[in-house]
Length: 586
Image (cartoon, rainbow, N blue to C red; front, side):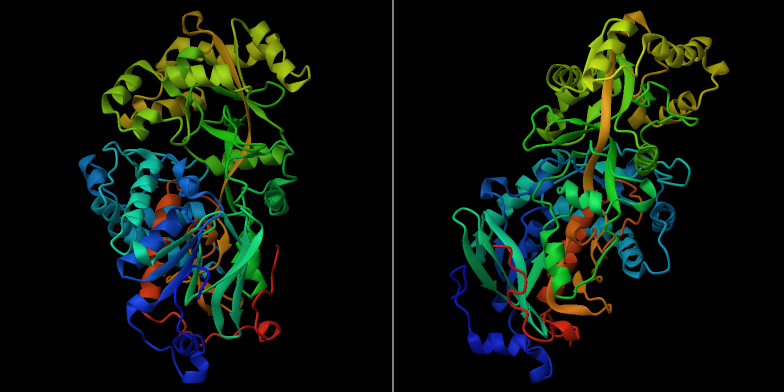
């Protein structure tokens, strides 16, 4: 009997797990195939659903309580970069695979060795509509009709067209829908759920992987599971700040001590280590998708928990000494990675955004489902009203509950509070005035005489209807009618690993020679969203949730084909003996 209480057939298992002894994998009826899925986030749930649809047996393992299944997707906003969709055409956006690929490659900056990342990028662009947009639609999940335009590019080409689609209901509604489908599935009896189980290593032999082992965290007991295939869907490494610092990009200098955790402590790379131990390739861990405008979470769930703000475009972004960042000012919506890189290279422990209440209500937003309740709960009238009057509830929450948000009636009071927060005297009222007044003066002269790059970018942003409603029309900071003044201390915040376990287009894990490891798959963030780094250096944004779905479909298709153990793979010589329980952390 397996740990999940399912009957095992030793003779069949032996035939399937020793393909080189018997020539090729034995093709069996699909409903006899047994798969372990490690991780119950979006990628893991999608894999499990696809396999259950074909009547497969599935063990679904996660470290969290079952009530918290869904991973980071439960808290994500739900934006997806999709190419040539009906909604784009409705908005008269004429997108194409050629345009999207050129945009992707400009941001990715792949080199000659990035074979699988590039193939996954091309696969994403070709298949994101049928396998993501339409697949979600068949499950009753739809997108807000207004397509957003993000990551337009700053020093290089980015999204030349709007293609950021926001799920109506946010990512939380999507995960709740998939979880409901899983629990009510006609083949629910073939699903074995193991909550609060931590997987520490993989079990296999010279010819492939056929199980995993770990600890039941509720009581500390060990467990082993055996199956025909193992799918790693455990997320990335950015929940472990020690590992983030270990893999910090070399050209960024030393990682700041003030990093905030915008991921989850369970995203610790434990299964990346397990894959490396059995000879799997793990690549590009220095590629991460971090954010520049992190603040301490108003309702922290663990030490160092941060919240990613979507900064106000009309706010002035200052360095720790209160000087405006330049010569090119920071404006969100163009190149998140470049902003993070500049802050990191400058070795700034934090930066400041200075604005006023009117700007904050109109423009300031926070990423995720929790801080977008009208979209999350699908309350259209409330959302429309908020767009007209501003997001007063969010601003009130940040002012009252986030220690990094400061309010003051004048610059002297603002500077004093900024200094008290940081425990220094780096900011002065006169210094703030010297940075803000020239900007405000340009606004008062009128658009005909604007000569500031931030104002030019605001003008460009407001040409797109999706940004016009969320961007002030040239709002001075020191406007007495728009007060009080506000300052937000921003710190770098970790979020996603864009490198990871290297996979082919069937989501099979590859070894250091580029050969697929029989029986082992990786999906979602664990796989660097495909190929160990399909985004390259930068993301067009919105490529993460959708890649979780896309890579999961690929893994499930290959498992369903019955060719799980037919690769002819043999472990490298140092692993040529059985590798069962080679890595235990119990």
